[in-house]
Image (cartoon, rainbow over all chains, first blue to last red; front, side, top):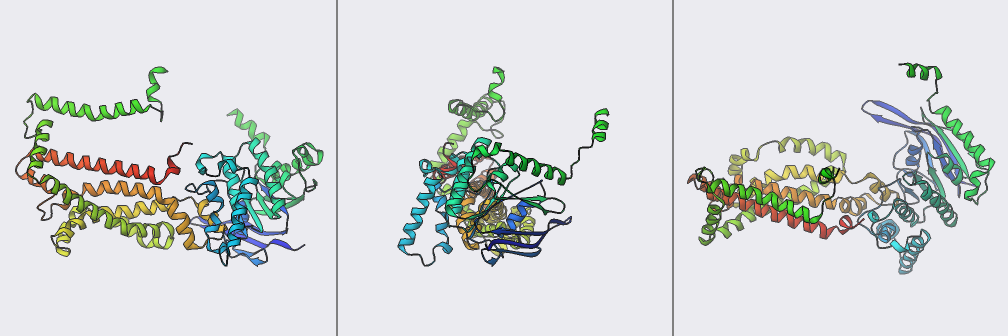
Length: 275
Length: 265
Protein backbone atom coordinates (compact mmCIF):
# COMPACT_ATOMS: atom_id res chain seq x y z
CA UNK A 1 0.00 0.00 0.00
CA UNK A 2 1.19 3.52 -0.74
CA UNK A 3 2.46 5.60 2.12
CA UNK A 4 0.29 8.50 3.23
CA UNK A 5 3.21 10.02 5.15
CA UNK A 6 6.87 9.60 4.18
CA UNK A 7 9.71 11.17 6.09
CA UNK A 8 13.00 10.87 4.23
CA UNK A 9 16.29 11.79 5.90
CA UNK A 10 14.56 14.46 7.94
CA UNK A 11 16.82 16.69 10.03
CA UNK A 12 15.70 19.57 12.19
CA UNK A 13 18.05 22.01 13.85
CA UNK A 14 16.67 24.75 16.09
CA UNK A 15 18.65 27.97 15.91
CA UNK A 16 18.75 29.99 19.10
CA UNK A 17 20.92 32.74 20.49
CA UNK A 18 22.99 30.18 22.36
CA UNK A 19 23.73 28.20 19.23
CA UNK A 20 22.07 25.49 17.24
CA UNK A 21 20.32 22.56 18.87
CA UNK A 22 19.87 19.42 16.78
CA UNK A 23 16.33 18.20 17.43
CA UNK A 24 16.05 15.46 14.81
CA UNK A 25 18.72 13.64 12.89
CA UNK A 26 18.10 11.55 9.81
CA UNK A 27 14.57 10.42 10.55
CA UNK A 28 13.06 7.99 8.06
CA UNK A 29 9.48 6.87 8.51
CA UNK A 30 6.86 5.46 6.15
CA UNK A 31 3.24 5.39 7.27
CA UNK A 32 0.81 3.42 5.10
CA UNK A 33 -2.70 4.81 4.57
CA UNK A 34 -5.15 3.82 7.29
CA UNK A 35 -2.49 3.04 9.85
CA UNK A 36 -2.59 4.19 13.46
CA UNK A 37 1.02 4.93 14.43
CA UNK A 38 2.01 5.91 17.93
CA UNK A 39 5.28 7.62 18.78
CA UNK A 40 6.91 7.28 22.22
CA UNK A 41 10.25 8.23 23.68
CA UNK A 42 12.07 9.92 26.53
CA UNK A 43 11.54 13.67 26.84
CA UNK A 44 13.65 15.62 24.39
CA UNK A 45 13.64 12.87 21.77
CA UNK A 46 11.92 15.14 19.25
CA UNK A 47 8.63 13.26 18.98
CA UNK A 48 6.57 16.44 19.14
CA UNK A 49 8.94 18.14 16.71
CA UNK A 50 8.45 15.30 14.23
CA UNK A 51 4.67 15.71 14.52
CA UNK A 52 4.90 19.47 14.04
CA UNK A 53 7.05 18.95 10.97
CA UNK A 54 4.46 16.62 9.45
CA UNK A 55 1.77 19.20 10.31
CA UNK A 56 3.83 21.85 8.53
CA UNK A 57 3.97 24.03 11.65
CA UNK A 58 7.78 23.83 11.53
CA UNK A 59 9.95 23.40 8.48
CA UNK A 60 12.63 20.76 8.00
CA UNK A 61 16.28 21.82 8.03
CA UNK A 62 17.08 19.11 5.50
CA UNK A 63 15.35 16.06 4.13
CA UNK A 64 11.80 15.80 2.90
CA UNK A 65 8.34 15.05 4.19
CA UNK A 66 5.53 13.99 1.89
CA UNK A 67 1.95 13.75 3.08
CA UNK A 68 -1.13 12.71 1.11
CA UNK A 69 0.87 12.75 -2.09
CA UNK A 70 2.36 16.23 -1.81
CA UNK A 71 5.47 17.67 -0.28
CA UNK A 72 4.80 19.38 3.07
CA UNK A 73 5.57 23.09 2.80
CA UNK A 74 3.17 24.42 5.43
CA UNK A 75 0.02 23.50 7.34
CA UNK A 76 -2.85 22.09 5.33
CA UNK A 77 -6.42 21.01 5.88
CA UNK A 78 -5.71 17.36 5.00
CA UNK A 79 -3.47 17.16 8.10
CA UNK A 80 -5.60 18.16 11.10
CA UNK A 81 -3.90 18.41 14.45
CA UNK A 82 -5.23 17.89 17.96
CA UNK A 83 -3.23 19.64 20.68
CA UNK A 84 -2.85 18.80 24.35
CA UNK A 85 -4.97 21.79 25.41
CA UNK A 86 -5.90 25.45 24.96
CA UNK A 87 -6.73 25.00 21.30
CA UNK A 88 -10.52 25.38 21.53
CA UNK A 89 -12.04 28.79 20.88
CA UNK A 90 -13.48 29.87 24.23
CA UNK A 91 -15.80 32.47 22.67
CA UNK A 92 -17.59 29.83 20.58
CA UNK A 93 -20.07 27.24 21.81
CA UNK A 94 -19.28 23.53 21.44
CA UNK A 95 -21.27 23.36 18.20
CA UNK A 96 -19.69 26.51 16.77
CA UNK A 97 -16.23 25.19 17.62
CA UNK A 98 -16.96 22.00 15.71
CA UNK A 99 -18.34 24.03 12.78
CA UNK A 100 -15.40 26.44 12.84
CA UNK A 101 -13.75 24.99 9.70
CA UNK A 102 -16.90 25.91 7.78
CA UNK A 103 -15.99 29.57 8.31
CA UNK A 104 -12.80 29.09 6.32
CA UNK A 105 -12.74 29.82 2.62
CA UNK A 106 -10.89 26.61 1.74
CA UNK A 107 -13.87 24.53 2.86
CA UNK A 108 -16.41 26.73 1.13
CA UNK A 109 -15.08 26.86 -2.39
CA UNK A 110 -17.73 25.92 -4.92
CA UNK A 111 -19.98 24.77 -2.16
CA UNK A 112 -23.62 24.25 -3.01
CA UNK A 113 -26.58 24.28 -0.68
CA UNK A 114 -26.46 20.51 -0.47
CA UNK A 115 -22.81 20.76 0.62
CA UNK A 116 -23.80 23.10 3.40
CA UNK A 117 -26.54 20.72 4.41
CA UNK A 118 -24.14 17.79 4.40
CA UNK A 119 -21.66 19.73 6.52
CA UNK A 120 -24.28 20.59 9.05
CA UNK A 121 -25.31 16.93 9.12
CA UNK A 122 -21.70 15.96 9.66
CA UNK A 123 -21.35 18.38 12.55
CA UNK A 124 -24.46 16.84 14.14
CA UNK A 125 -23.14 13.34 13.59
CA UNK A 126 -19.76 14.17 15.12
CA UNK A 127 -21.47 15.84 18.05
CA UNK A 128 -23.44 12.66 18.69
CA UNK A 129 -20.54 10.31 18.04
CA UNK A 130 -18.42 12.17 20.58
CA UNK A 131 -21.22 12.14 23.16
CA UNK A 132 -21.51 15.91 23.19
CA UNK A 133 -25.21 16.35 22.34
CA UNK A 134 -26.09 17.47 25.86
CA UNK A 135 -23.49 20.28 25.84
CA UNK A 136 -24.04 21.54 22.29
CA UNK A 137 -24.63 25.14 23.41
CA UNK A 138 -22.12 25.19 26.30
CA UNK A 139 -18.88 27.13 26.17
CA UNK A 140 -15.56 25.24 26.45
CA UNK A 141 -14.80 26.71 29.90
CA UNK A 142 -17.92 25.00 31.24
CA UNK A 143 -16.69 21.53 30.18
CA UNK A 144 -14.38 19.02 31.84
CA UNK A 145 -10.95 18.40 30.31
CA UNK A 146 -12.11 15.14 28.72
CA UNK A 147 -15.14 16.80 27.14
CA UNK A 148 -12.97 19.63 25.82
CA UNK A 149 -10.67 17.15 24.09
CA UNK A 150 -13.67 15.42 22.54
CA UNK A 151 -14.71 18.77 21.06
CA UNK A 152 -11.17 19.30 19.76
CA UNK A 153 -11.19 15.88 18.08
CA UNK A 154 -14.64 16.44 16.58
CA UNK A 155 -13.50 19.80 15.20
CA UNK A 156 -10.37 18.25 13.70
CA UNK A 157 -12.48 15.53 12.03
CA UNK A 158 -15.01 18.04 10.66
CA UNK A 159 -12.97 18.63 7.50
CA UNK A 160 -12.47 14.92 6.78
CA UNK A 161 -8.68 15.09 7.14
CA UNK A 162 -6.73 12.23 5.52
CA UNK A 163 -4.26 12.36 8.40
CA UNK A 164 -4.97 13.09 12.05
CA UNK A 165 -1.99 14.32 14.05
CA UNK A 166 -2.32 14.10 17.81
CA UNK A 167 0.16 15.65 20.22
CA UNK A 168 -0.37 14.04 23.64
CA UNK A 169 -4.09 14.80 23.35
CA UNK A 170 -4.95 12.92 26.55
CA UNK A 171 -1.87 13.95 28.53
CA UNK A 172 -3.82 16.24 30.85
CA UNK A 173 -6.67 13.79 31.54
CA UNK A 174 -7.07 11.42 34.46
CA UNK A 175 -6.56 7.68 33.92
CA UNK A 176 -10.26 6.71 33.80
CA UNK A 177 -11.21 9.44 31.33
CA UNK A 178 -8.22 8.49 29.24
CA UNK A 179 -9.40 4.86 28.90
CA UNK A 180 -12.80 6.03 27.70
CA UNK A 181 -11.12 8.35 25.21
CA UNK A 182 -8.92 5.51 23.92
CA UNK A 183 -11.84 3.35 22.90
CA UNK A 184 -13.63 6.38 21.48
CA UNK A 185 -10.72 7.47 19.30
CA UNK A 186 -10.12 3.92 18.01
CA UNK A 187 -13.77 3.61 17.09
CA UNK A 188 -13.95 7.02 15.42
CA UNK A 189 -10.74 6.65 13.42
CA UNK A 190 -11.80 3.23 12.14
CA UNK A 191 -15.15 4.73 11.10
CA UNK A 192 -13.56 7.74 9.46
CA UNK A 193 -10.88 5.61 7.87
CA UNK A 194 -8.18 8.17 8.57
CA UNK A 195 -4.52 7.63 9.30
CA UNK A 196 -3.26 8.73 12.68
CA UNK A 197 0.11 9.78 14.04
CA UNK A 198 -0.25 9.88 17.81
CA UNK A 199 2.50 11.21 20.07
CA UNK A 200 2.47 10.23 23.75
CA UNK A 201 4.79 9.61 26.67
CA UNK A 202 2.57 6.80 27.95
CA UNK A 203 3.81 3.44 26.66
CA UNK A 204 0.62 1.59 27.59
CA UNK A 205 -1.41 4.12 25.63
CA UNK A 206 0.98 3.79 22.70
CA UNK A 207 0.61 0.00 22.53
CA UNK A 208 -3.13 -0.03 23.11
CA UNK A 209 -3.82 2.44 20.30
CA UNK A 210 -1.09 1.76 17.79
CA UNK A 211 -0.76 -0.69 14.94
CA UNK A 212 2.91 0.14 15.22
CA UNK A 213 4.85 1.89 17.97
CA UNK A 214 7.72 4.14 16.89
CA UNK A 215 10.32 4.50 19.63
CA UNK A 216 12.42 7.63 19.46
CA UNK A 217 15.60 8.42 21.38
CA UNK A 218 17.16 11.73 22.37
CA UNK A 219 20.49 13.45 21.74
CA UNK A 220 20.13 13.76 18.86
CA UNK A 221 16.43 12.99 18.28
CA UNK A 222 16.14 9.87 16.13
CA UNK A 223 13.97 6.82 15.45
CA UNK A 224 15.46 4.11 17.63
CA UNK A 225 13.25 1.24 16.54
CA UNK A 226 9.73 0.39 15.43
CA UNK A 227 7.57 -2.30 17.06
CA UNK A 228 4.65 -4.08 15.44
CA UNK A 229 1.85 -4.46 17.95
CA UNK A 230 0.63 -8.10 17.88
CA UNK A 231 -2.94 -7.35 18.94
CA UNK A 232 -5.04 -7.23 15.78
CA UNK A 233 -7.18 -4.26 14.79
CA UNK A 234 -10.01 -4.61 17.28
CA UNK A 235 -8.81 -3.62 20.74
CA UNK A 236 -10.36 -4.10 24.17
CA UNK A 237 -9.31 -3.05 27.64
CA UNK A 238 -8.80 -6.68 28.73
CA UNK A 239 -5.91 -6.97 26.24
CA UNK A 240 -3.81 -4.83 28.54
CA UNK A 241 -3.37 -7.86 30.78
CA UNK A 242 -2.30 -10.34 28.08
CA UNK A 243 1.25 -11.62 27.99
CA UNK A 244 1.93 -10.13 24.53
CA UNK A 245 0.91 -6.71 25.74
CA UNK A 246 2.94 -6.84 28.93
CA UNK A 247 5.98 -8.27 27.13
CA UNK A 248 5.96 -5.50 24.59
CA UNK A 249 5.43 -2.89 27.28
CA UNK A 250 8.40 -4.21 29.28
CA UNK A 251 10.53 -4.29 26.17
CA UNK A 252 9.72 -0.72 25.16
CA UNK A 253 10.12 0.67 28.68
CA UNK A 254 13.52 -1.02 29.01
CA UNK A 255 14.59 0.48 25.71
CA UNK A 256 13.44 3.96 26.74
CA UNK A 257 15.41 3.66 29.98
CA UNK A 258 18.49 2.69 28.02
CA UNK A 259 18.19 5.68 25.74
CA UNK A 260 17.18 8.38 28.21
CA UNK A 261 20.71 8.98 29.41
CA UNK A 262 19.96 8.57 33.12
CA UNK A 263 21.88 5.66 34.70
CA UNK A 264 21.24 4.23 38.13
CA UNK A 265 24.74 4.45 39.52
CA UNK A 266 24.73 2.58 42.83
CA UNK A 267 28.10 3.87 43.91
CA UNK A 268 27.05 7.46 43.30
CA UNK A 269 23.79 6.93 45.19
CA UNK A 270 25.67 5.59 48.19
CA UNK A 271 27.99 8.55 48.04
CA UNK A 272 25.00 10.89 48.01
CA UNK A 273 23.44 9.23 51.03
CA UNK A 274 26.69 9.56 52.98
CA UNK A 275 26.94 13.34 52.61
CA UNK B 1 -8.21 28.83 62.43
CA UNK B 2 -11.54 30.67 62.54
CA UNK B 3 -9.80 33.91 63.50
CA UNK B 4 -7.90 33.94 60.21
CA UNK B 5 -10.84 32.92 58.02
CA UNK B 6 -11.31 36.38 56.60
CA UNK B 7 -7.69 36.45 55.50
CA UNK B 8 -7.41 33.22 53.53
CA UNK B 9 -5.07 33.85 50.62
CA UNK B 10 -7.26 34.55 47.60
CA UNK B 11 -10.19 33.42 49.72
CA UNK B 12 -13.87 34.02 49.07
CA UNK B 13 -16.08 36.63 50.76
CA UNK B 14 -19.84 37.03 50.53
CA UNK B 15 -21.31 39.87 48.45
CA UNK B 16 -22.66 41.40 51.66
CA UNK B 17 -19.24 41.62 53.27
CA UNK B 18 -17.76 42.82 49.98
CA UNK B 19 -20.14 45.77 49.73
CA UNK B 20 -19.89 46.49 53.45
CA UNK B 21 -16.11 46.71 53.22
CA UNK B 22 -16.23 48.68 49.95
CA UNK B 23 -18.56 51.30 51.46
CA UNK B 24 -16.46 51.41 54.63
CA UNK B 25 -13.39 52.02 52.48
CA UNK B 26 -15.11 55.11 51.06
CA UNK B 27 -17.04 56.30 54.13
CA UNK B 28 -14.21 56.09 56.69
CA UNK B 29 -11.85 58.51 54.89
CA UNK B 30 -14.81 60.82 54.26
CA UNK B 31 -15.78 60.76 57.95
CA UNK B 32 -12.15 61.32 58.92
CA UNK B 33 -11.99 64.26 56.57
CA UNK B 34 -15.21 65.71 58.01
CA UNK B 35 -13.94 65.23 61.55
CA UNK B 36 -10.53 66.81 60.98
CA UNK B 37 -11.90 69.81 59.12
CA UNK B 38 -14.85 70.51 61.46
CA UNK B 39 -12.60 70.81 64.54
CA UNK B 40 -11.01 73.79 62.89
CA UNK B 41 -7.54 72.45 63.62
CA UNK B 42 -6.51 72.95 60.01
CA UNK B 43 -6.83 76.15 58.05
CA UNK B 44 -9.55 75.62 55.39
CA UNK B 45 -7.18 77.08 52.80
CA UNK B 46 -5.09 73.94 53.21
CA UNK B 47 -7.92 71.51 53.82
CA UNK B 48 -11.50 72.61 53.18
CA UNK B 49 -14.20 70.44 54.72
CA UNK B 50 -16.42 68.14 52.64
CA UNK B 51 -19.39 70.44 53.23
CA UNK B 52 -17.48 73.41 51.85
CA UNK B 53 -16.53 71.35 48.82
CA UNK B 54 -20.14 70.22 48.32
CA UNK B 55 -21.25 73.82 48.61
CA UNK B 56 -18.68 74.83 46.00
CA UNK B 57 -20.04 72.19 43.62
CA UNK B 58 -23.49 73.71 44.15
CA UNK B 59 -22.25 77.20 43.33
CA UNK B 60 -20.40 75.86 40.32
CA UNK B 61 -23.61 74.22 39.17
CA UNK B 62 -25.80 77.30 39.70
CA UNK B 63 -23.31 79.47 37.84
CA UNK B 64 -24.11 77.24 34.89
CA UNK B 65 -20.49 76.36 34.19
CA UNK B 66 -20.32 72.92 35.74
CA UNK B 67 -22.05 70.97 33.00
CA UNK B 68 -20.34 72.82 30.19
CA UNK B 69 -16.98 72.25 31.92
CA UNK B 70 -17.74 68.54 32.26
CA UNK B 71 -18.97 68.35 28.69
CA UNK B 72 -15.92 69.98 27.13
CA UNK B 73 -13.49 67.98 29.29
CA UNK B 74 -15.36 64.81 28.44
CA UNK B 75 -15.12 65.64 24.77
CA UNK B 76 -11.36 66.31 24.93
CA UNK B 77 -10.61 63.12 26.84
CA UNK B 78 -12.85 61.01 24.64
CA UNK B 79 -11.46 62.49 21.42
CA UNK B 80 -7.81 62.04 22.43
CA UNK B 81 -8.46 58.55 23.70
CA UNK B 82 -10.56 57.47 20.70
CA UNK B 83 -8.04 58.85 18.22
CA UNK B 84 -5.33 56.97 20.03
CA UNK B 85 -7.41 53.76 20.02
CA UNK B 86 -8.17 54.00 16.31
CA UNK B 87 -4.46 54.10 15.48
CA UNK B 88 -3.13 51.93 18.31
CA UNK B 89 -5.42 48.96 17.63
CA UNK B 90 -4.22 48.12 14.10
CA UNK B 91 -0.64 49.05 14.95
CA UNK B 92 -0.63 46.91 18.10
CA UNK B 93 -2.22 44.07 16.13
CA UNK B 94 0.63 44.28 13.61
CA UNK B 95 3.31 44.40 16.32
CA UNK B 96 1.78 41.50 18.23
CA UNK B 97 1.30 39.35 15.13
CA UNK B 98 4.39 39.91 12.99
CA UNK B 99 7.93 39.84 14.31
CA UNK B 100 9.07 42.25 11.59
CA UNK B 101 6.56 44.88 12.66
CA UNK B 102 7.61 44.29 16.25
CA UNK B 103 11.30 44.82 15.46
CA UNK B 104 10.51 47.93 13.44
CA UNK B 105 8.09 49.65 15.80
CA UNK B 106 8.37 48.39 19.36
CA UNK B 107 11.75 49.85 20.37
CA UNK B 108 10.69 53.22 18.95
CA UNK B 109 7.41 53.16 20.86
CA UNK B 110 9.20 52.09 24.04
CA UNK B 111 11.53 55.03 23.62
CA UNK B 112 8.83 57.64 23.10
CA UNK B 113 6.54 56.44 25.89
CA UNK B 114 9.10 57.44 28.51
CA UNK B 115 8.98 61.03 27.34
CA UNK B 116 6.77 63.16 29.60
CA UNK B 117 3.61 64.37 27.87
CA UNK B 118 3.89 67.73 29.66
CA UNK B 119 7.18 68.40 27.94
CA UNK B 120 5.43 68.17 24.60
CA UNK B 121 3.19 71.15 25.35
CA UNK B 122 5.47 73.77 23.73
CA UNK B 123 5.90 71.56 20.68
CA UNK B 124 2.19 70.87 20.42
CA UNK B 125 1.48 74.61 20.58
CA UNK B 126 4.02 75.15 17.85
CA UNK B 127 2.76 72.37 15.60
CA UNK B 128 -0.95 72.13 16.33
CA UNK B 129 -1.76 75.60 17.66
CA UNK B 130 -3.72 76.45 20.76
CA UNK B 131 -7.28 75.48 19.88
CA UNK B 132 -9.21 72.30 20.76
CA UNK B 133 -6.93 70.08 18.72
CA UNK B 134 -3.98 71.01 20.95
CA UNK B 135 -5.76 69.67 24.04
CA UNK B 136 -6.77 66.53 22.20
CA UNK B 137 -3.18 66.14 21.00
CA UNK B 138 -1.76 66.25 24.54
CA UNK B 139 -4.17 63.56 25.69
CA UNK B 140 -3.33 61.57 22.57
CA UNK B 141 0.41 61.77 23.27
CA UNK B 142 -0.10 60.72 26.89
CA UNK B 143 -2.24 57.72 25.93
CA UNK B 144 -1.19 56.48 22.53
CA UNK B 145 2.28 55.03 23.07
CA UNK B 146 1.28 53.08 26.16
CA UNK B 147 -1.80 51.83 24.37
CA UNK B 148 0.12 50.49 21.38
CA UNK B 149 2.34 48.38 23.62
CA UNK B 150 -0.59 47.10 25.65
CA UNK B 151 -2.54 46.14 22.52
CA UNK B 152 0.54 44.37 21.16
CA UNK B 153 0.87 42.45 24.41
CA UNK B 154 -2.84 41.50 24.37
CA UNK B 155 -2.42 40.16 20.85
CA UNK B 156 0.75 38.26 21.75
CA UNK B 157 -1.08 36.54 24.61
CA UNK B 158 -3.42 34.69 22.23
CA UNK B 159 -2.47 31.03 22.83
CA UNK B 160 -0.33 29.60 20.03
CA UNK B 161 -2.42 26.41 20.06
CA UNK B 162 -5.51 28.41 19.00
CA UNK B 163 -3.60 29.85 16.06
CA UNK B 164 -1.97 26.59 15.03
CA UNK B 165 -5.25 24.68 15.28
CA UNK B 166 -6.76 27.09 12.74
CA UNK B 167 -3.73 26.71 10.49
CA UNK B 168 -4.03 22.92 10.46
CA UNK B 169 -7.69 23.35 9.54
CA UNK B 170 -6.59 25.23 6.44
CA UNK B 171 -7.05 28.84 7.56
CA UNK B 172 -5.23 31.50 5.55
CA UNK B 173 -3.13 34.14 7.27
CA UNK B 174 -5.92 36.71 6.99
CA UNK B 175 -8.43 34.20 8.35
CA UNK B 176 -6.21 33.42 11.35
CA UNK B 177 -6.07 37.13 12.17
CA UNK B 178 -9.75 37.79 11.56
CA UNK B 179 -11.30 34.64 13.02
CA UNK B 180 -8.86 33.67 15.77
CA UNK B 181 -6.47 36.41 16.89
CA UNK B 182 -8.96 39.28 17.00
CA UNK B 183 -11.86 37.45 18.69
CA UNK B 184 -9.45 35.79 21.11
CA UNK B 185 -7.82 39.09 22.10
CA UNK B 186 -11.08 41.07 22.31
CA UNK B 187 -11.69 40.78 26.07
CA UNK B 188 -8.11 41.84 26.84
CA UNK B 189 -8.44 44.69 24.34
CA UNK B 190 -11.56 46.00 26.05
CA UNK B 191 -9.66 45.92 29.36
CA UNK B 192 -6.85 47.87 27.74
CA UNK B 193 -9.36 50.45 26.51
CA UNK B 194 -10.75 50.74 30.05
CA UNK B 195 -7.34 51.21 31.64
CA UNK B 196 -6.11 53.71 29.06
CA UNK B 197 -9.35 55.68 29.42
CA UNK B 198 -8.30 56.21 33.03
CA UNK B 199 -4.90 57.45 31.93
CA UNK B 200 -6.46 59.81 29.42
CA UNK B 201 -8.38 61.46 32.27
CA UNK B 202 -5.19 61.92 34.26
CA UNK B 203 -3.76 63.96 31.37
CA UNK B 204 -6.76 66.29 31.33
CA UNK B 205 -5.30 68.92 33.69
CA UNK B 206 -2.08 68.94 31.70
CA UNK B 207 -4.00 69.30 28.45
CA UNK B 208 -6.08 72.18 29.77
CA UNK B 209 -2.94 74.08 30.74
CA UNK B 210 -2.76 74.98 27.05
CA UNK B 211 -4.70 78.19 26.52
CA UNK B 212 -7.96 76.72 27.74
CA UNK B 213 -10.82 78.78 29.12
CA UNK B 214 -13.15 75.94 30.04
CA UNK B 215 -13.09 72.42 31.38
CA UNK B 216 -12.58 70.66 34.71
CA UNK B 217 -8.79 70.78 34.43
CA UNK B 218 -8.89 74.49 33.57
CA UNK B 219 -11.19 75.12 36.56
CA UNK B 220 -8.65 73.42 38.85
CA UNK B 221 -5.77 75.46 37.47
CA UNK B 222 -7.77 78.71 37.76
CA UNK B 223 -8.87 77.88 41.32
CA UNK B 224 -5.21 77.42 42.20
CA UNK B 225 -4.51 80.99 41.13
CA UNK B 226 -7.20 82.32 43.46
CA UNK B 227 -6.34 79.86 46.24
CA UNK B 228 -9.86 78.40 46.05
CA UNK B 229 -8.84 75.10 47.64
CA UNK B 230 -12.45 73.94 47.87
CA UNK B 231 -12.84 74.27 44.11
CA UNK B 232 -9.61 72.34 43.53
CA UNK B 233 -11.03 69.59 45.71
CA UNK B 234 -14.34 69.74 43.87
CA UNK B 235 -12.63 69.44 40.48
CA UNK B 236 -10.43 66.53 41.53
CA UNK B 237 -13.32 64.66 43.12
CA UNK B 238 -15.52 65.21 40.06
CA UNK B 239 -12.83 63.76 37.80
CA UNK B 240 -12.58 60.79 40.17
CA UNK B 241 -16.33 60.22 40.13
CA UNK B 242 -16.52 60.45 36.33
CA UNK B 243 -13.58 58.03 36.06
CA UNK B 244 -15.23 55.58 38.43
CA UNK B 245 -18.45 55.74 36.42
CA UNK B 246 -16.59 55.15 33.14
CA UNK B 247 -14.76 52.23 34.68
CA UNK B 248 -18.00 50.65 35.84
CA UNK B 249 -19.46 51.16 32.39
CA UNK B 250 -16.53 49.33 30.79
CA UNK B 251 -16.83 46.50 33.30
CA UNK B 252 -20.51 46.18 32.54
CA UNK B 253 -19.77 46.19 28.79
CA UNK B 254 -17.18 43.45 29.35
CA UNK B 255 -19.73 41.24 31.07
CA UNK B 256 -22.32 41.97 28.38
CA UNK B 257 -19.99 41.40 25.43
CA UNK B 258 -18.18 38.30 26.68
CA UNK B 259 -20.70 36.10 28.49
CA UNK B 260 -18.45 33.09 27.86
CA UNK B 261 -15.87 34.59 30.25
CA UNK B 262 -18.30 35.41 33.01
CA UNK B 263 -20.48 32.28 32.94
CA UNK B 264 -20.61 29.89 35.85
CA UNK B 265 -18.11 27.08 35.61
